[in-house]
Amino acid sequence: MSRFSPRVKLSNSSSTSAISSWFGNQFVAVPGDYYSIATANGTGSSGTITFSSIPATFSHLQVRLIANMGATNNFNIRFNGDTTSANYIYHQIYGDGTNTGAGASVGLPFAGYATTSYYGISIIDIFDYANTNKNKTISTIHGSDANGSGFSLFRSGLWLNTAAINQIEIVAGTNFTTASKFALYGIKG
Amino acid sequence: MPAGPTYEPLMTHTIVTPATSYNLTSIPATYTDLILIVKSQVATVNNSNFIRFNGDTASNYSSTILSGTGSSPYTFRYSNDSRIFIDFYASPANVDFGMDVVHINGYSDTTINKTTISRGASPYGTDLIVGLWRSTAAISSIQVIQPSFNFNAGTTFTLYGVTAA
Image (tube, rainbow over all chains, first blue to last red; front, side, top):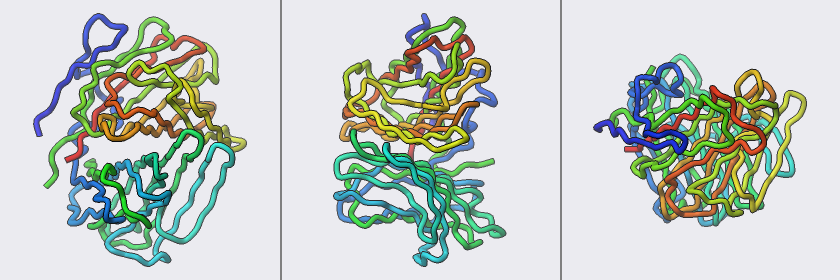
């Protein structure tokens, strides 16, 4: 993919700002080390999104999604086809505008939530996913807002398995709409 | 096969004179997501930063806030608002800087309303905030607002584009 070099104008300046050599340690991720692996869209007829044949050549993975379903529902993440809830643990803290809550349990890590009209957005980080000496830890930030309802949530998760992750599924109880977008990225370093 | 590097810095700017807002305009629609990073400092603590899109100042925004100050967690909701919060208790400081990282997934998708997720961090707290702009328009400009006090000189705004394969 060729590098796109747009010029975005800042209203307080008399000229546009291009990508410059100023960038150094102020990057959140160093350009060139963050790779798009695969994308998937909802089909309207399935509640499962699958990323398979994930290469073991990165250090970490990130899933970025914005999703909606035909009914208000949660969706979860699972690895390598492991459907056994006892193999997963999570902790969470959330706020819904009225109440805060925290919890921990055994079960599939949360990937997001959506209402029928408004979308949920999630950023899911999976650290050291290919390291066969470690169980796998993930971190999720998620939010869904429907102008009067919704919540913000932090969740951490653990997959009790040292296998390298080669498949990720996002699983919902209802079908993802066709406007739902999922993307998997690999981070080198 | 990975598609290649996909995390592109679009612009960055550090202000040299105080200002109450900054606009990032002419944002191309060619990326999948945007990530906005605001490193800010103001004259007085605990004054939240906000964003608006495409010059829309109407009550088309809402925010659901989770915030922690070190003593308790808090949650708030603002509906039918004229802006989206990107921090709350983790608002800019007057000596040290506050940091806001705002993810805008699907910013150019004209079939969906726009949802943001922001993490705020400062010496005064930590926040996670979801925002909604009830518009299906592609986002072509972002205004970052400090309505109570000026952003101090040294405040930096950085925008990245993320492209899926």
